[in-house]
Length: 128
Image (cartoon, rainbow, N blue to C red; front, side):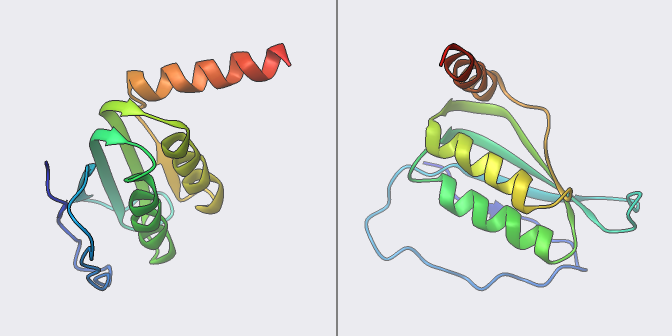
């Protein structure tokens, strides 16, 4: 199991620690790293690299962290290229981040697992 690792830029406030109360379960690994240089918006850019599974047990934590960063004034780029498995909850969390992030959150590069599920959802919607 991977631990949650974070490197926070000094311009963003630290998020309060929320220690899990139950037994450890599967976790997605989220690496946060700020990129040097201002963005077009003048806000700091933070890259979030997600590896391992993005599912019902890990998606809410990822969405909360990404949206917290966006609310703190960062442009957030979510990299899902290392995700091995994604379910509908994971895909919904990514979609929620991009819609609620109001232009401050992008998912790129999108990993193969995420793209397969997106294609399946698109084909199911077009068949309906």
